[in-house]
Amino acid sequence: MNKLNKLTVVLTTLLLGSGVALAEECSGINGRVSENNVVLNTAEDGTVTTFVSWTGVSTLITPVNEANTGWQHCSGLVVSKADKSASGSGSCYRVSLNGDQNIHSWQFNSDSRTWKRESGTGSESGAASGTWEWAAKMDNGLGIQSWKGDCE
Image 1 (cartoon, helix red, strand yellow):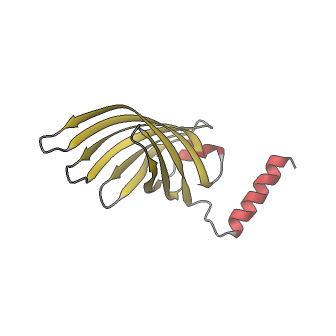
Image 2: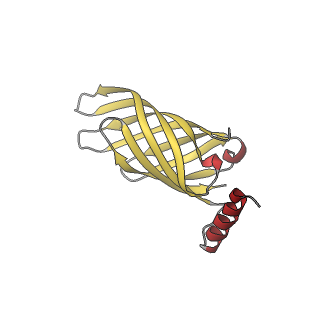
Image 3: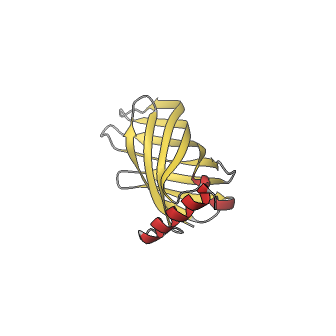
């Protein structure tokens, strides 16, 4: 048995022993760089922002495999109001290092931040949905998001 196979057996044993549901729970980290932002100011001191962002995705938590690392291209619309509240929605096209692909939608408002896989191929073809949060967000368009959910 080579070192990679031994490591896989050890990690699988540890994860199964920890009670982590390998087939259902998924989570990870997204590093985001925004490009091509267009900001329109509204009459009441709010803004509407359309954007395109490229995201390098690196899943660090569960499940651990090549399909969880890749790149995604996202676009969306965010409405920010004078009272500092905001809401938005959009979609992303994701390609994993192994070539599997998916399209997922996202949305947020003052009460929730959710995502849902709309379609996919290979390991990205099952139903998946969950929540996301900002781990760090910078004014220069860089940001880090953490996400989790249920993935088939």
